[in-house]
Image (cartoon, rainbow, N blue to C red; front, side, top):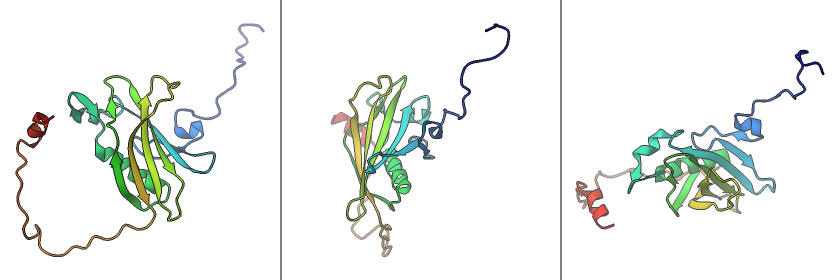
Length: 183
């Protein structure tokens, strides 16, 4: 071809590929779990995302023993989001397995794997991570598991006087220092 004809032979992009929909996933509208994908075998849903200090600078405020750790409440928030996405009423129980440490540079790939419903309609969600730098590494770390409840949450009866009779005030001054001293 003649070099000045101003014709290209490359395919033009037909979709934007910078978002989850461009990758064939569903946008999940969550600040950490940005995309969702139904499993091919129909046995649940996988939510994916990424955590880093660059994308989530507020995490730097949650340092434990010199390491930035994703707080447990973030797992609660992600579990409640997963519950709403798959049609569950809310979170029944959440158990932490291992802390999710955020590196000083780079990020962590995150997956929330939601199971298919059991006979009572309950689902489980498991939160996994691995360093994002090596996608060939098959090692994922389990950080938390949660039970998602299908029905409406039971109302909590409110009655009586607060604080309840016999309650004792507990001073928390020096609490964290005392825990640190005990290891």
